[in-house]
Amino acid sequence: GGQYIGRFGKKAAAIDLLHQTVGAYNQDMGVTSTFNPIDPHTGLSTDPEVSDQTIRDVVFYLRTLKAPIQRDQNNPEVIRGKEVFMSINCSSCHVPSFTTPQSDIEALSNKNIFPYSDLLLHDMGPGLDDGATEGSAETFEWRTPPLWGLGLAPESQGGEFFLMHDGRAKSIQEAIELHGGEAQQSRDEFVALSDSDKQAVLKFLRSL
Image (cartoon, rainbow, N blue to C red; front, side, top):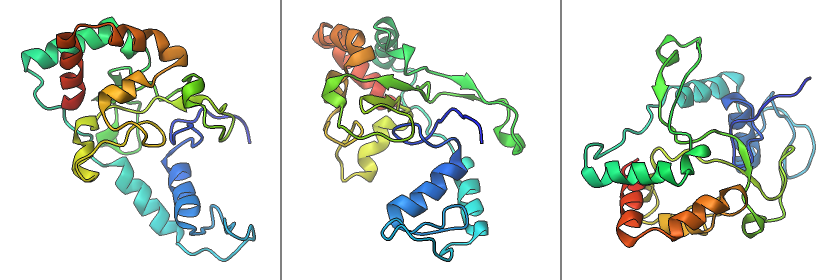
């Protein structure tokens, strides 16, 4: 029982990687477990189709995946792009870094990481209100997606971007321009930038 702050999933409905993994097995693949024995198609409780050990092995794998490393960090245009990104307050939600807490896996303890996310829900405006909710999130609320690995995304997506919660944005610039709600001011400031400053921001984001 009790209330928890979600950190995982597009609506931040999952409280940890175990919760997220169990949900992915069940909702994405229709696979039941002792953690969630309900068949999503029939609504009936069934025998588990994946073992607890397999679930825990997958969680361990996910916890220990290496974070993407930024490329071209010393490129002058990338550096300038980051400065502009910060100046238009994108970093109020896409928080650049934080330090991990103590972990039962020592290698994960007290590490400076750079996800560019606060992992919190935000009102993203009516343009991104798709009428669906999850957990306690409103239909117009979305978790700030981490930006690390953003520039590598096309490598696993057939050379294309599929950004925002439903993949509607086919470029980083389009994704920025779809921001509304709490992000409207930063979005408008981005749109008002000179072409060279816009390109610097985009180059910085592609470096992540």
